[in-house]
Image (cartoon, rainbow, N blue to C red):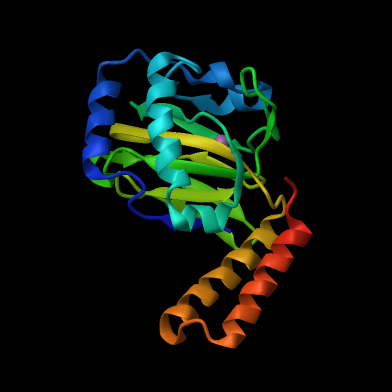
Length: 225
Ligand code: NI
């Protein structure tokens, strides 16, 4: 399931991050990928574990973890420190699949179930740079307002199209979900969204108590924690 999560970061948070990132040192993005990724990745990123990446990453992680839509769709168990990247002058990231297991400095390794990009540039600031994700329903092109996020299954082949003008700055991260399977997560998300919508219309009628119980019983069956 791909899901657009609007307004993860407030405009003032985006502004402050952009100012810090403008003054930062970027390194070759190939530092954090395996052999296949290195052949197709051409961009720049903040060094993994650098003080700025950790500081800004905490703001991004906290905003996502406090977002009810993100929580319902992703069911996060572990979230990796976010990366920050920049594409300009034709830089791109060709078709690839994200590595399954990510080493998390000093903590338990994280299985990448869900990939998340938080856009930090406005779409009109750059040409190209669409995130293209291929799933069983076809190819999806994503280019969102600054502060918005997209989540998609880490199992999908995806790419960032060449940025042919301006600069595309974004944060991205991986999450290990309590529910490994994308289809099960999608079903839980849809059930939850419909329960919330019905509750808004009818209050806690007995049927909704039953459906809420059903949601939690499915989560109990499927969650690994
Ligand atoms: Ni990727």
